[in-house]
Length: 295
Image (cartoon, rainbow, N blue to C red; front, side, top):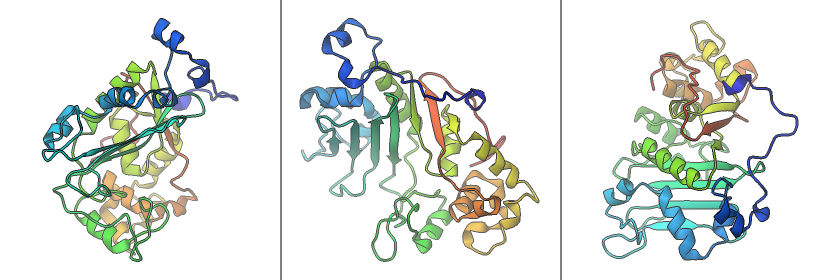
């Protein structure tokens, strides 16, 4: 398991610095990892060709979006690509209809300091499902997925509808397909691993199922599982003082996630912060911090 590896005092870089990789080297050696910045410095049409690989074709055709042109049936653009030259960040968003502020799919990748790649954001939202205003508070200020401020009424409605913290709609049930395309894309760029920071306890559990291991946070996840056992420190805080601390929340991933979102980790002097996960392309790490857990 990754948690048992000794951490290097000076982390080793995964690839050469982007400016050190020439076109000749890319052509001559297919094993040289390519950065997001290198792709973003290509002409627009070349960038578009490469970044097409990040979006599952079935997701586009499901919403009648042309996989090559990224246009809807009426000829309007339905995909935004943000990939500025000299930037190490790419963001792809799909929307259904006219509301670009309510995407059905968003993926954001970024070069990291080790010359690897981080998955910063992945959103998959069913446009036909009810929407809950958890992303804005009562004053209209952004909640940043509930990490900066909260809209408690909207969160309670979302929770009762079966959503996890940070969600505004039910998901599209397409994450497995998205990760398959992402890993094919990273293989094209000759990267052997990628990283992310899980937004919530539920996210971390889902990423475990997708084959991720922990760079940081495995010990906290184990302590959380122990704390939610009957008579544990977290279990005792499920006192019905808020809707997010119902007594039966110890016994499901989503229930635990809402209790943690509500600040229950204070009971063990901990915070949901600093977790980092890694996925080796084509490999499943087998992490399981909630054995037998149900979502």
